[in-house]
Image 1: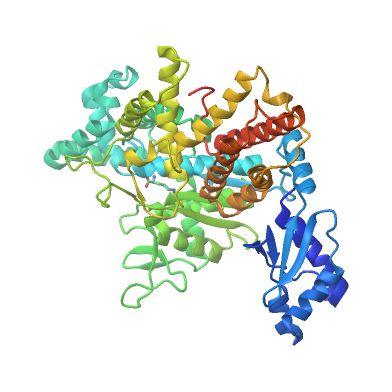
Image 2 (image 1 turned 30 degrees about the horizontal axis):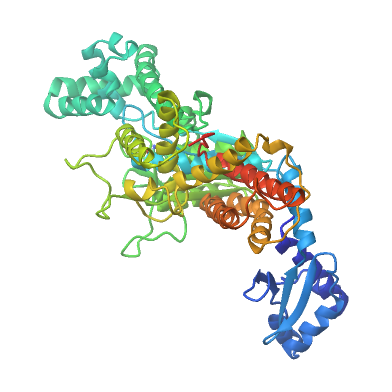
Length: 581
Ligand code: ARG
């Protein structure tokens, strides 16, 4: 990997070993961006304390052993003992060229590839997806793509809510409407919100219906074939709907990735019995509970994870416990990432704690709740429709695309595009804007859904980045050239060329961090900074009209490397990049 921070860290560590002995080989060299140079190594300060010597003296000793002649043009001890490091232009240029010429942009595949399950989206059957699912879906998909690019084996897992007591009333309501309605995709069934509400309303007001529904739950849980067939009809209607949303959002989930709550149903009996017989679970007030140590309620009383209610029914937690066990024992994963709303944080902590108690989650398997913050309206309250209902995802996306069209038509352009191309671009801009806005915010922070901000063509937005990409492509088009043909060599003259080339070297390190923390916003931030560095370059360094052929070849190479990094990065975020805009 060409990341200068890593290259210099290794060199400083060599110098530490040479100066102070092998026991210092693993000392963190504390390499940071510098105000006065490209980077600085701050290790002399903590080290001086340890050695009981003056920091500047320690710094000088490190510098005396530091072998960076090929990488750095300047090494200087400053202030209390900082080592300022200025990179050589030739080194930066050569590394940037490696990025350009490498299929993977010089990002090495993970040294120890892991098998990672990324659980995301996870909407509920017979319910409309809402903005909360939008975030878990978009962020989860980006995490999966990033880890895959880094060479990990990713198991995408859509843990849909497809089981439980509501299915009794939903099935009975389906029978009342006539089951052909489901096959026909009749709106009485496919309008999921209306369907669910109608069933609920009958359940609350009609005793006979409520009775039938309860009997239906029992039939479903005991595996009655006819009931399962009807249940499947409902699940299929929902899957068709989920898939339409996924297609529109360019989400990589397919039906094959669905392992809903029902998948674990047969494991619930055996695992609860096992925990009971091993004395890990105990009966408390008629319910089977585990009390993981360290979890206390408001009054300091121990908090239970209820595995089986007193009526014999299993819980959401029971399913999640079975899920952990299955992922470890059967799927043999090294890491599981749950991309789920922050309000479920305690739930996951407790499930993971119980799984560790049971020995189902060994220490070398990491279980992470990648928390997703709530989506707020511009009034900073939970996003609602004007009427106070939950906002439907499809309507939100329609509005995004419509607004993107309005913004798009405001741009002045030389070539006017056909209606069909315009429609495709506007769709990509609207969807890209929504996705990027979500991905550029730290996933665990609350997030204000604001069309005006996300669809702007300026600032840290999807449209700005898509536009940056289109602008680079248009340079090649106008020059009658193809980006794949640009190979440099790269020669750095103007400071914006140097800054751009230097930024190109950081892609791999950022991806690695984004993968390790399951935080796509780190990648988004990098892409935005890269596009900004490109904009500064673009404004100062003519490409097609460069002063000489050598400079032109170099600038085309920089433009091509930027283009591919932007497109690859945006693709890992699942943000489309139209050819023209
Ligand atoms: N279906 C749930 C919901 O819509 C999310 C499921 C989260 N995943 C899990 N393993 N519990 O809130």
